[in-house]
Image (cartoon, rainbow, N blue to C red):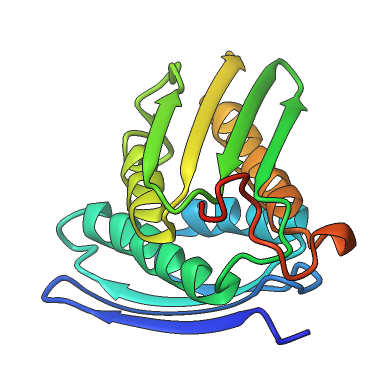
Length: 197
């Protein structure tokens, strides 16, 4: 089986980002983005998805976190699209429910080749520390547009914004793991009844 890995760099006026991933990893994480809370969430993708991710980002954080968060989502999405390749043999669909104390989130993903995001997370606070919770929509929008996936994110319960976000990222990691898992019975087959995604 060919290695499902990718390295992608993105260089704009606002950010310079480099991402490398291994879809068949062990959950190794290495981040240098200047945004500690985002790094904590990205670590959940690695741990729960068993995906190795290394990301280095330099952005205009003196203005705010927006460009760096959005561009990390874009670059990570590009890396996933490159690493997954033609999608032959994958399960394609993945889903997960994850609780954390009072919070509960559900994430459903389809490696469809069609970008689409439906995100319903009624944050109980506008920020966690200095991090603006609105930026998570920008992160996931960037990801789906470039990974070419359909992604549904729903926070079903939550009274603590940190818990709400953490359950989303843990569920996202687990849904990715399920969708990207290779199925021996699907070896060499595109996961669609129409022959294309």
